Image 1: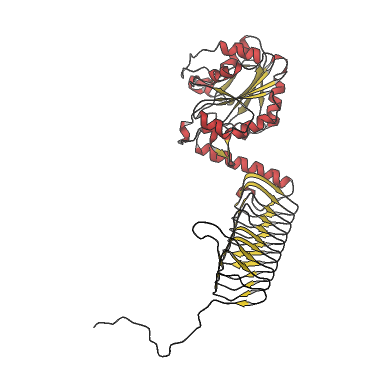
Image 2: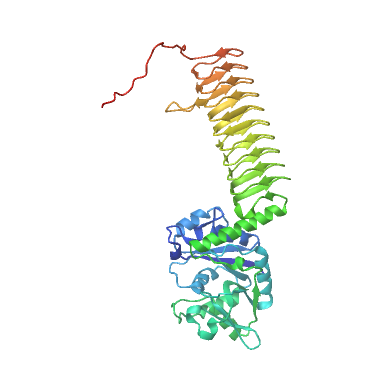
Length: 456
């Protein structure tokens, strides 16, 4: 039997108090709905149907790259009504797995078990036993422990509210049977909605076996209804990622203080200190050290390099045995060759720094090509923008640029040239020579500093 997955994503999420639709709220820097679709893809279904409603255009745009079939629920009349919008496009001989766009942590393995449990015409649902079941639908069983129905809390009596086995909303059934049950739903309940959960009672009445399985952890079934739920899910998601990375050999000094908002690949004996944020696609080589409070985004860092604390590395490529930071900022298109050093309070942008070259502190270097064994002193600025266009600074091998210099691009500093401290360089500086642009120092003897007159 083919598998069709229906993801319900039409809710507004008023308790989020946000203009952003609930299913687009970020978890690990990706929308909740994207997490669910990616998990669904792992099951290799024949099709994924996403039922959308509130904020529909934004939801579709956010997942425009994903192979889903969009189904509109113009009126939000309940979960049963939502599934009914998609069931018409699903063949009778398929199995239908129902997921939710605000339940992002369920694992593919759990869903595979749920789908398997729906073999031979059974209806399979995922339940969870909660110490505090408040707010959840309860699983009602008969004297032989067979599932008979699900009752929503608002419709439950006193005895039913004391049941701790609760409904997650995730279920799987044959399409033909599910289509029939959906057609028989009524809105005779406190909310005046068509509940998907009422299909359980219809299945039991029809003599269809109802199989209830449980997730490996409560976290898998956690729905996101407000920002508090979202923050809890974020920590669960981050810890799951941290555990997976440590299983591959990465050292995390404190896995509870680590955030991965993308994809990270790390080599052997690499260590990440506390409060590091990784965004986009990041590749770390062997024996890399990343200090505390560092942000890494879409970058590559080769073997034996150290990124010291409070540095930001974005869109950069850093070679082997380099030293970066602390408090360095490497902006996009920065390329650092092996054994180079970028020190504290240095900012680079669209710059290539040659092998064993150094920018030690307090400098801005943008739109520059820097050769090997170059030393750039404190307070050096490449003046790359004239108010209209960006221009390039070229510093050739072996050059020495003294402290507090301004290099006004376009300009070239020749091989083994020396630029005296405090110079403003507006023309090319020749190789193997000292270039200065200072006024001659003079001293005025007997000069007195002005002072304010005092009054008695």
